[in-house]
Image 1 (cartoon, rainbow, N blue to C red):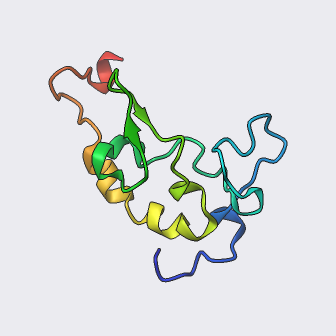
Image 2: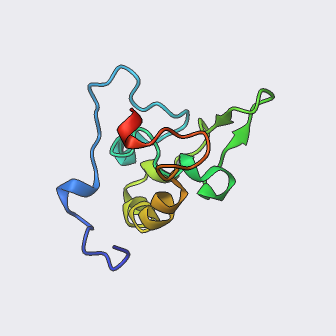
Length: 103
């Protein structure tokens, strides 16, 4: 995806300007703020996400200062990490996880 074949394509950028929270990150440029990854797929990677985050005292990851997945030019970088995201997901049968049959 990093080749740039996604640049200028409609599927690589979406701004939900009608959302009551748009843009939801302080200091964001509304003209370059993509809502496509409203829930950041990199969140699952914890400290390896590569974004500007911090952990709150209770251990919650706070990404409110991070704009990385919301910038138009970063679509390819986010999608390129889907293999890493998939590898980080719990597998059926892992300790503490119910298998798909049990859900």
